[in-house]
Image (cartoon, rainbow, N blue to C red; front, side, top):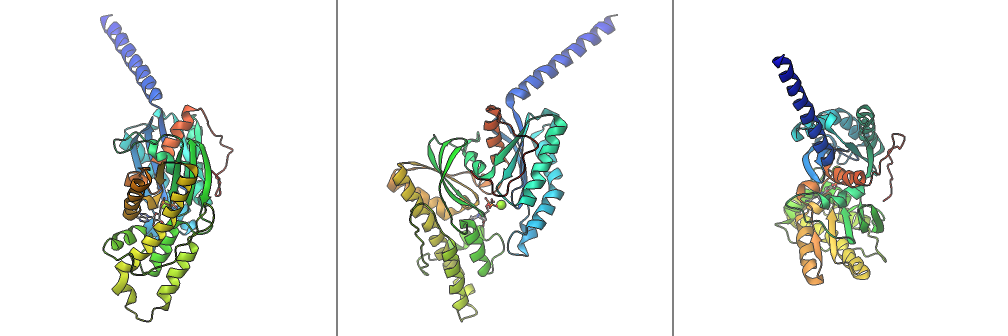
Length: 362
Ligand code: ADP
Ligand code: MG
């Protein structure tokens, strides 16, 4: 008899522990975030605003041979990596999939085939677990990364100027609230990261060239080769002119050793020009809109010279600059997770019938 009572008491304790644990977890809002917009298969687990894990399977080696992202190869790589990356994110966070509150995924913009892999996976898992599905605009994510709860992150206050500098985008955005983002200016042709990568390719650097140019430029003379600094009217920028000018300049050189003998100076001069184009525009927008908080996002935000120059401009203009930690600059799923957290709080869910959109607008 005593055995049975003890067993019953034990079962009751286990039951209440589970109930309390589930309550605690649901309060924590455990989100699985999936990012597959371009050439990085990424998954993250967030508990509220805190990142528990942030895993990425990078495809650089696959695309390197072609000097840029090959869309079909990117989709195939996403397909083979998505399950291992999600499993790794769950196990690193020590979370079982049954503990998830919601799934956030990148709906767009990006390569359609790549987006379809992440969105289809997210939808299927959300249906299987019967939990909300949250579509996220990749560009929102790059800027909302500054709201992750982290010792190294100091969140900005609304409104602020968001500047997204990546391989596919160059945008100046007036951010009024988490999801109230007004596009003020953008590139009319190539993105800043694309200009880094394509000019780097001409220098014989492997894809993506941005971080190598950054390193080589550190010991180069940025004034050695003056390239044209485009300055469009209004708030848009253009990077195709400098890209063509740079490629033509290299093409015209007769000395076969010209690149190898001047590589550091070429990188420093190119980097100086690419950065100056966007800095001039940031200064103009900040002045016209009377904004003093400048929030940077995207892969090119990892560039050491742009980070230094922004601090210099901040001093002379009285701005406060917000730079993300390096691991949150290039594509990652933590940024999709934090955007998902704010949508979850608003109960702003998506449906399985919504499709991925390659040209999703802000
Ligand atoms: P996308 O979303 O378009 O894939 P990411 O945000 O992943 O872009 O950023 C990738 C881009 O960032 C590439 O163009 C790469 O060359 C560039 N990049 C990464 N690190 C640096 C750096 N240190 N300096 C300049 N560009 C960089
Ligand atoms: Mg990328």
